[in-house]
Amino acid sequence: MTVIQVPRGLRRAATAAAGQASTASYLTGWRVVRWLPEPVARTAFDQIADQVHRRDGRSVRRLRDNLRRCVAEPDLDAATRAGLRSYLRYWCESFRLPSWPLDDLVRRTRVIGEHHLRDPQTAGRGVVAALPHMGNWDWAGAWACATGMPLTTVAERLEPARLYDEFVAFRTGLGMEILPLTGGAPPMRRLAEAVAEGRLVCLLADRDLSRAGAEVTLLGEPARMPRGPAALARESGVDLVPVTLAYRGRDLELTFHEPVPHRPGDAGLVAMMQGVADAFSGGIAADPQDWHMMQKVFTADLAAR
Image 1 (tube, helix red, strand yellow):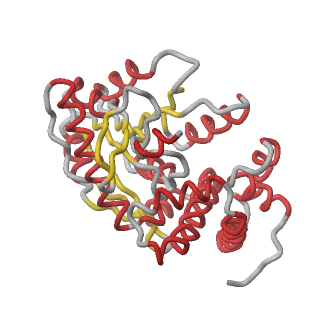
Image 2 (cartoon, rainbow, N blue to C red):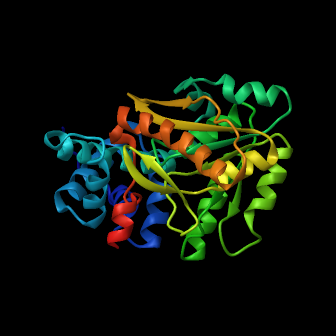
C-alpha cells in the first residue's frame, strides 16, 4: 500500500474514530474528512487501522477473540487487520455522509431480498429490522430514507452531550428519527407508534449486556441478545426481518433475510431472537471482516468478566 502524508485534520478524525482522541479532535476531523477526495481519506484511514492493529490494544484483542468463533486460527490475524480496516472505513464513510450525493449512495447500494422490506411498506405496515454491527448501518439508514422508507432507530447517549448532539443532528439530517436509549422517555412506546405509522424501525441486536437478554446460539456458541426487536414486532403484529451487511468493493450489500415467525410466550421471544441469531451467524461467517464487534458478546466471555 502506498503511504501518504496524512493531513492533521484527517489524522485527528481517524484516530478519534479508533477511540484514541478527544471530542474536539473528533468534531474537527469530522468536518475535514467530508471535503477530501474519497481515495485520500480511505487510504489514510487504512493506515490508521494498521497502526491500531500493530498496537494490539484491548479492543483489538476483543475483536480477535470474537472473530475466533468463525475464523480459523491461521487466518485470524489477517481477519482482525481486515476487520479494523472495515471498522475505520465505517467511520470514514460516516464522516463523509453529510456531503455524499444521495444518488451516488443509492447507486452503490446492492440489495438482496428487498421485497421483505417493500411488500409490507406497500401494504401500509411497518417493519422491525434487526441488524448486527456489520458494514455501515448509517449508510443503510440513509439508503432506506432516500428510497422512500422513513426510519426510526435508537442511539446510546454519548458523553459529552455535545458529541451525542452532533450524532443526532447528523443522522436526523439524513432523514432518520433518533430516540435516546437513556436520559429521555423510554423509547419502546415511540417505537411502537413508529411501526404503526408504517415506518422502518432498525435496532442493533447482536449484543445485550443486561441480565434480561435472550440466551441464543451465535456462531455455534451461547451468546446474549436483546429481546426488544422480537417483543416489538410481535406486539405490533409486523414482520421481524434480520438484516446483514457487507462491503463489496466500493459498494455496500444489504441482505434482508426471511422474516422470523412470531411465537407466543417468553420462550417464543427467545425462539424469535434465535431466528435472528441464525441469520446473523450466516452473514458474519460469510463476511467476518465486516463484523465490528469489539465488546464482549458471548456468554463465556461475560461470565469471565
